[in-house]
Amino acid sequence: MSISANPPGDSTRCRVRKIVRPVYDESYLCFWSLESTFFLLRDPQSVFHRASCSIALVIACVSIPLQMLSGNFAAREVAKLEPPKLAAMEAHYQTGTGVPLVVGGIPGR
Image (cartoon, rainbow, N blue to C red; front, top):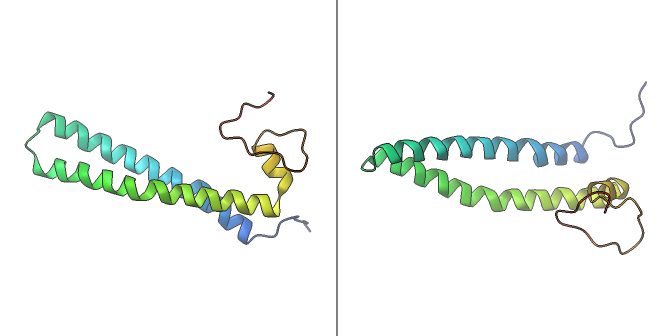
């Protein structure tokens, strides 16, 4: 019998949404745009590769803000459900009330 502090549910969905989708989106868009750009540079008059590159850029412009919103939602859920985990993610090893969030913090400083 295992005892879990966090039952599977909202926390699991947040983790999946936060990790799996952005990795899939970014790797797919990176490959797609690099391939389209490579072939577009080889044949600048190619309508197919120009359209393919344009579609990749449009999808990137739509998915990047959605990823930012998803990450914000997941961070807010972590802050609400697991404050010690948020402190560790932010590299705040001496916690307290009113500690500011750090973007791009360096652990140990």
